[in-house]
Image (tube, rainbow, N blue to C red; front, side, top):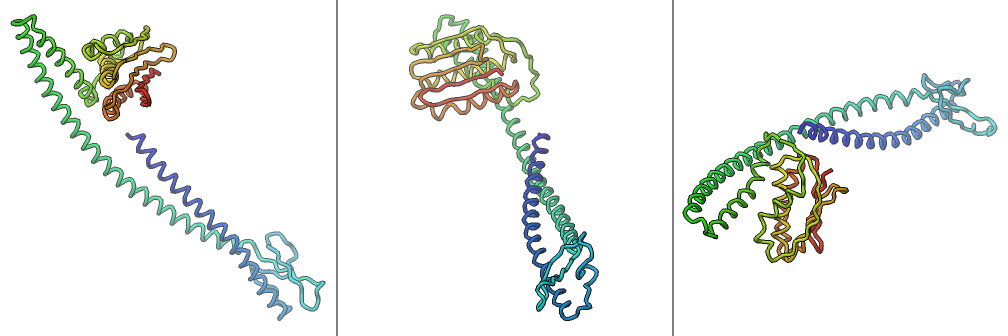
Length: 322
């Protein structure tokens, strides 16, 4: 967060400095035009004064026919009645430089105060906004932890009751289906608990991706019975926490299975360090894939891995372990 805030304030300061620099450049270009006009008018006035009074030799900034041109800006006028004779009026460069320096100092001082004030006000607004977002985030995280904790207790109780029922009715098919449904519900909610608990310690291991893909497919056997499953699995080891990898694959494959119509294709590319999951996209798939994909991206972000979704004629998910 500190790095993001620094770049936020730095970007604003940079944009303000660049903006004021462009304004200053425009002002200086205009000043140069004004400078030429003012100096010419000043030289013209002293030339006319000289014509009325040939003894006139200028003042501390203006010289009539200066003996040297260094440090002067020279303007030449023809004397009326004697065209071959030219009168040179020299104006010291420092005359305009003093005015320019005074204007520049005032301009830079005002801009410095303005930039500082704008950045301060911007920082105050942003800090307040970030504080509100953080408070809301903490509230949502607390709510999610409370809900998932209560749900976990409820599911644990149901599992105990289910185990007691299975002892009494070991061959009951509906109980087996209920047990599988409970397990899937636990998997669905586990990723929420995983994400809201930021203090979770990661136990990173070398895990064979193909094995965990096959394990994830077991949860969706019933949904895949009437669909064609194409597997191109090869041994490929990834460095992840076991629970995180299970969450990622369960959500990724679960989305693909849920929204498929007739087939599911899963392929591992060891050379490309990628897992590719695609299907033929059911008619109602457009609005149901976003949440699972975002949750999966949040988990993968911990490891610097990337998930890209392409939704055209087919739904295709590219999970890159690089």
